[in-house]
Image: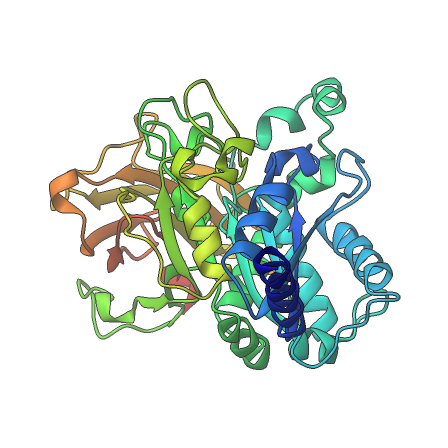
Length: 439
């Protein structure tokens, strides 16, 4: 009799617990370039189980979205369109109700796919999702190792069609992730508030950026040589936060004066957490999103990021952060009028006096700056240079640095700029270099 009563009580308790599931939370996992849902390992089982074990009021569902990475003709915008189709089909027959939510966990290029899906839906572009639905039901967004600031490792497969075919890497999607690409410029302009209502919406999502730092493996991206990154995407690119200084003024207070550091703005768009993980599993280092099946029992799990994913989706405080990013990247954009350089028959050369003594940064490939791109405008040319460095462990703070820039001719006026750098961030310096003939 006692056994029967216990059984009845258990059934009633189970019924009551099920009836109190007030909402459903759908989490979509979006993989990166040349990858599939295997990028997340056993996340669909492990995260799904742990989330539901730790939530009484919400029922979680995890679903992977796979897209045709490897096609030379498709861009991250095309993949975002295909996610719109997937999203619509997924909710057929299981419509979102009041109190329900959905979120996104994206790896690498998957974050660019997510951002394009959100932005083009916001703009009301055809083949995208009704933004009112997104705004009403989207809860949060986590990206891991997404190159919002670009990466240079893409140049390697871009040189070889055969290598792209072997690795399922599409030409246009690789170009989208390159440091000076139009896509990376687009990401930066959106995160700077080009469309203020859209940026406000992003801020409402309480976004989490997970960045990988690897201590004992060589960095593969030449732009991040000797740096602490995840072997593929520099730490400074994997966060939505960055510094930006723009000064295109034609006239200055006087010769010898410098642009002050206070003109450097910091754009804080997401919570960023560094973990000891690689872009994908390498030797003894775990992949930043590849969750092993052993993690079904957390006490037996040593994956460095899983608790950050869990707590964020459960709206719990983040665990203690034990890793610190040390590397940074400086992106220098110099716009020069064509009239001031066209009379010379050779390629213009610029001289940089970069004062890194205050923080003892390690230089990359033996140069202070290296040229990555030249963009042609109607009456001017924009040169993009990059500097990558790493701060000492004892010096992990914001620094003010000075750079003096000399133009390719004696008629160009020297520019002196104080700007800010900090560990784990990218700083963009956007300048016009004037010559006497420009006045």
